[in-house]
Length: 401
Image (cartoon, rainbow, N blue to C red; front, side):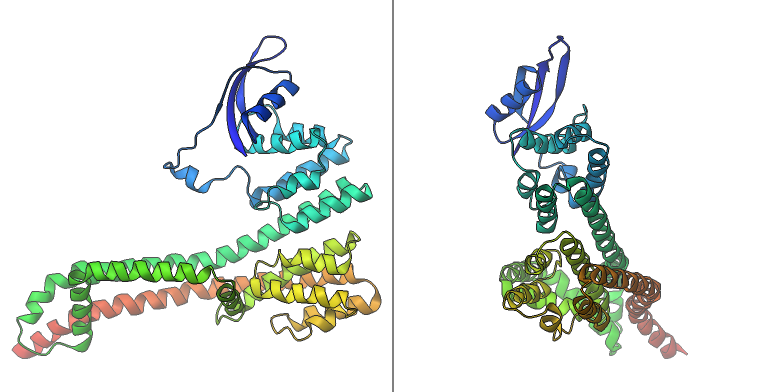
C-alpha cells in the first residue's frame, strides 16, 4: 500500500486537498472518482526516513485497534451501514490514520468482506480479531461481535502496557547505573591513575581492578567495539532460529523475577481470547488455534497448537493442558469445570478475570520492590567505584601518621 497526496476539485468547484492509501496510482484515481473528485494533481508521498517520527510511527497500530472497534461498534449499533460508519470515522480530515480507514472503506465498497479487508493488515489485526469479525458477518451479528472484540482488544492492550510499565523502571535505572559506572571508570579514575601508580605500593584490589578495566577500554577500544558488534550479530542470527526463540520464550515464563507475571499475562490473554471465540460459536479446536497467536509466546503457542490437534483427536482441552507447568492450577480447574458443566465460555472468562487480578497484584508488588532493589544496585556499583578511589588515599594517610 502506498500513500498518495492529491489536489482535486469537487462537483461544486471547491478545492480539495488530502491524502489517501491505495495499491497504485490507477486505484487512487478510481477511488477519487468514486468520491466525485476531479484530480488535478496526484503524486506518491515520499517518507523522509531520516526524520525521527518516521522511524517509529505507523499509520495504524494495535494500540489504536481497540478504540477503533469501539467507535465502529457504536456507529453500527446506531443503524449506520459498515461503509457509512468507516466513512464517518475517516471524516474529512487528512492524515495517515484517516487514509488507513479510507482504504478499508474502499475495500468494502469493492465488495470485499470486512474480515478480508482486516486480514490484509496482519501486523495490526490478529487472527483472533479477523476470526471474530468473520463469525459476526456469517451470523449477521457484526455490531455485537465488534463490540465484544473492542472490549477484548482494550483489555489485551492494558495487559501488554502493564507488563511494559513493570519492566521499564528497572531498565531505566540499569542504564543510568551503567552510564555512571562508565563515567567513573573512563573519566574520574584516570585522573588519579598516575598518582596511584607513583606511590610504588601495592594498590588495593578494587582499585587495581578498575585501573585494569579502564586501561583495557582505552587501549583496546577497537577490539571491544568489534567484539560487541559480532556478539550482537551472532545473537541476531541465533534469534532467527525458531528453536532458539522458543527456548528464550520458555525461559521468560520461568524467570526468577518476572516469570510469574509473564505467565499470568500470557494465559490471561489466551483465556480471554478462548472465552470470546467459543462464545461466538467457533469450534474449540479452531478457537485454540486462533488463540495461539494471541499468547505472544512461542512456547505456549506450540502447546496450544498441539492441543488443537489433540481436540480433533477427541481429547478434552483440560486433559491436553494438564501437563503444562506454565498454566496456573486455578486456571486449569476453571477449564475443567467449564467442560464438565457445559459452560466453557463463562468459566474461561472467569479464569481470565482471575489471571488479570493476579497479574495486577503481582505487578504492584514488583513495582514496590523495584525501586529499593534498583537503588541497592546503584549503591553497590557507584559505592564500589568511590571506594576504589578512596582506599589508596586512606593508605597514604596511614603512611604519614
